[in-house]
Image (cartoon, rainbow, N blue to C red; front, side, top):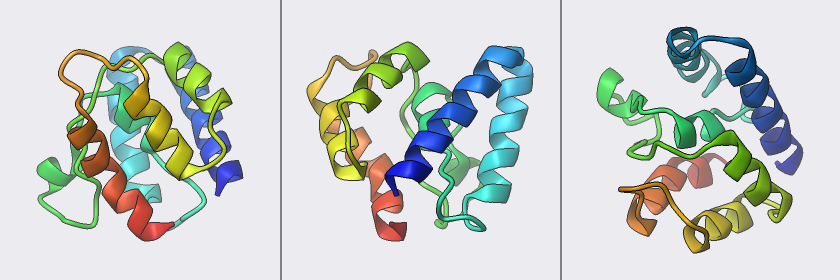
Length: 119
């Protein structure tokens, strides 16, 4: 699971570094809609923490995470990831660190609920 999280983060950093915001939004949607269920080793979790696209609300489908979080920077996530050793410690580190405006522990719990169900 940690390898999948690390690879997801690496892929998402590369995507954010190499594409414009418009392309990232379109790319994020494709990743979420195409890869989320097919490959349990890949996760759009880090994109969920950065962008403002809630696939559950947009698709009106409970198979997607309820993503009400946005505003994390990849730099911040990289620092948090270095202190994390799995999904539960990542969640704890997100909750204990400084959060973007509007992000609450309850919203972090809501986002992680779907990921915890799959893993």
